[in-house]
Image: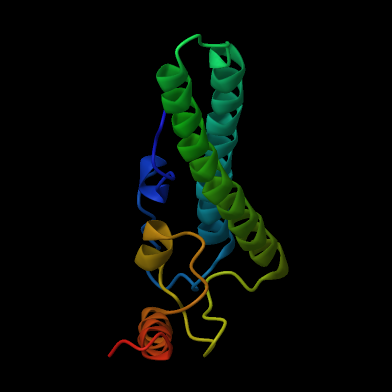
Amino acid sequence: MNSPTQDPNDVKFTPYEPAKGEEYMSDAELEHFRTILLDWKQQLIGEADRTKTYIQDESSAMPDINDRATQEEEFALTLRTRDRERKLIRKIDKSIAEIESGDYGFCETCGVEIGLRRLEARPTATQCIDCKTLSEIKERQNQGHT
């Protein structure tokens, strides 16, 4: 039951091939990403439902204290994973809202195109690769790393 936070690459899709001269973030591209995001969200929600059922089914009082402690640690790890996924669902919802508003696919820092392949790899990306790299460098420097 203890699975890592789901990766968008677990969602199966055919990479989008824009038509010659197709405008970036055309209606067809936006629909492609809306489908990826909605499918990913459904997988995460399904996993949360399975976790809830699993914990309810397995939460029997165990007479052995060591077995009980092991079970509680397993539940705690599973719930931490689900918490990360809950935060990820919020990011997915934000990306879907950006599709609706016409802001999806553009870097929130500099405004350039994020790019189809980067968005397929990380559909909730909000920065182009250059701004994200710079942001990570600054973050490391602020934490005292060089």
